[in-house]
Length: 323
View 1 (spheres, rainbow, N blue to C red):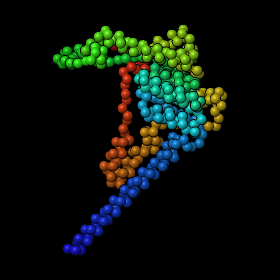
View 2: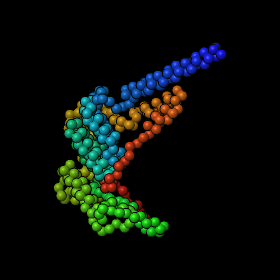
View 3: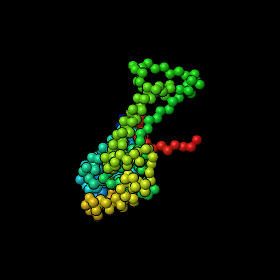
View 4: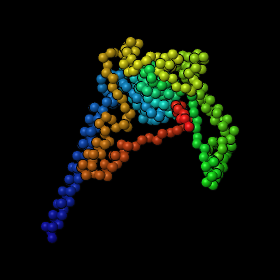
């Protein structure tokens, strides 16, 4: 009996030692992945690395999310970045989100030479972001502009009447939470929202007037909500020159004294988990070591996206569809 008890104790001790080494192995592998990601991820962490021109992409819906604002801040604070190219391909987003990105880019441009390159679309909030740069370059067939503000809410009151559903509300005042979408919009609520939209619109127009140095007549031509091609944008002062990244680099060299020899390096948002796929690699390592639960946690962590906050008013280009 004593021999069997000793064997059981030895086995338990070996299992504990094996688990410890497995944990240490996983930790070591994770450290190695992080080290490689920092070295080759394409983003200059902690302001390190050689001097270069940073490329920052503003794509898709603009919500002013923390990751994008943090990226712009990191580029601004990096001593290695000597100039910035902002590549824009966006139909816009929320008014407040577009304003947040604009202010962050203006602060960046006040410290580092910055040029915007419109690769496809810089409409509405996307054009707000482009206007923050010192130079706007667009392709001939790019679309720019759509200077205007939109407020939309689906109204399902007729549908609710059809199915016999009644949504009751107790409000502190008639305009609280109006419009709700559950009842017809009152004239008073519509008038109040109209004032909000017009105020946002005035802010948008003032921004374009200041940044593009337009007089009232020129502003009236471009601020009716339509989009313009890159070629039209040249005529209407919404775009400085036609071309792409090469033309932006030439301007940085000629007008901002940026060294021609500087390479262009892509900067990405931090939680994009860098070019080597940090989260997925760590998850695979943990799974190979037998820690399936930990691997699942890492997988979920790598896929988490921050919530997009919609403020109601949109600076967003939405072409109408034919019925």
